[in-house]
Image (cartoon, rainbow, N blue to C red; front, side):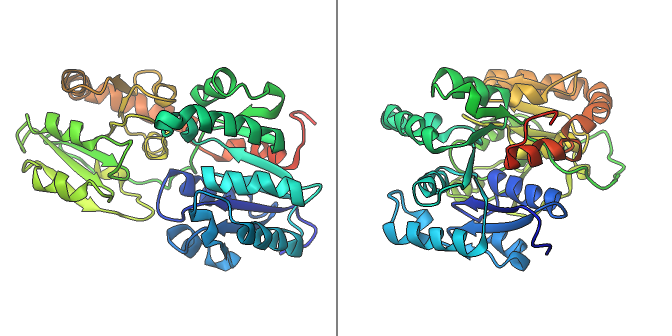
Length: 352
């Protein structure tokens, strides 16, 4: 690699398949000709294995809630030894480590990517404490990237982070390769793609789908997690479990994507489906509404009646929604935003 390129580190807690991990992979691939990338993660799984050529640093201390002095010092040495000038953090624990690096590495530019503000939705009774901690950590942050307009509102209204330190770069995904499948009109083939754990709610979707026959509608669930065994045990015969599929790219085999969830930032699975031209049925949480435009899908509340009503809308208007979804697919493609990300990482003002 060219030693004159900006040396940018991407740090994330877990390396398993997930939205923040896919975002990190997409960023490195998008900018690989413009930067010298580095990867730091708390475990050796899908993301680090996919980017093995980068020789990622595996830092198990990232998996612990309380920052480890030994982990901090090891990360400090890695940053200094590799001349990393910008550190981009994409998860809560990694975000703490990255911000604390400001205390030990003068001149390091530290960027935190929200991916949904877990300090708010996952904090429970301690959400106030986590929110205060996030506000304090923002003083050690050069820039906060919000991945949706909904996240930007939370950043401003609930976290009170200075707007001078934030930018909204709405999640996007690489333009997919052209694929086609001649799908019969019936049964309508629905896809759920996500980890089978909180805050995802595939159970609600399965309950509604069970009211349809296998000739009318099928649901394929791609993903794994602690809820999988119970969901499978109680699933009707028109629901199929494919397990975890890394780098899933079979969107063209389905009529629409359905993602029911209690909380989201801007979900990567729905974004990828939009980029492939699939209609969407999404819970009206977080930034999900930002993916619905010009008739490419519907939103629902997390109740059986609302999901059933939205699903009926989707099925009844499938042809029109598919046409709208294909027309707005380019709005989800990542490549046009390349310079926005590069400028954010390097601290270059827009238009500079």
